Image 1 (cartoon, helix red, strand yellow):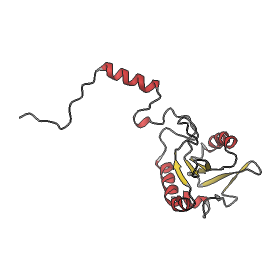
Image 2: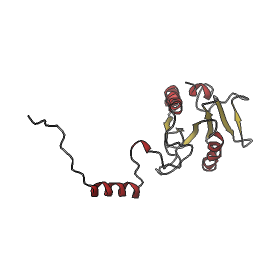
Image 3: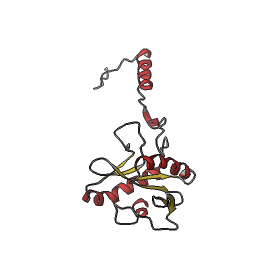
Length: 174
């Protein structure tokens, strides 16, 4: 008895594979688990650790209702403009016109200084937005103070967002 599959067999030749790989490289289509391997945006690691993703999930879950009541929304890994190749911070709070209001990067202790440096690219473009960097290894939140143009940390100050009721770190802690 011959077994039949409900799915038709695909006949893919080596030529088809070469064409697919060429098209993927030509149009910067990234395949499989390495989806972000070539991404050069702000603070992106090719495969973030589960702790990183857990902080993002936690923040989005706990901030959702407060932001929605204000007509705002939070997205993860969203570009800050309509350009798909633009910088894509870990978390961004947007207004109804898609203007970034608050930018939050989640990182490790060793990468935090590089992430803070990269935030300055966005500070120039969006000077009215809030900027935060959360070191989940040390549980320290850094915030950019636009008045002094310096970064302060949660070990010295209680850091909050204009758009959330609780100190920001409360939304980030798992």
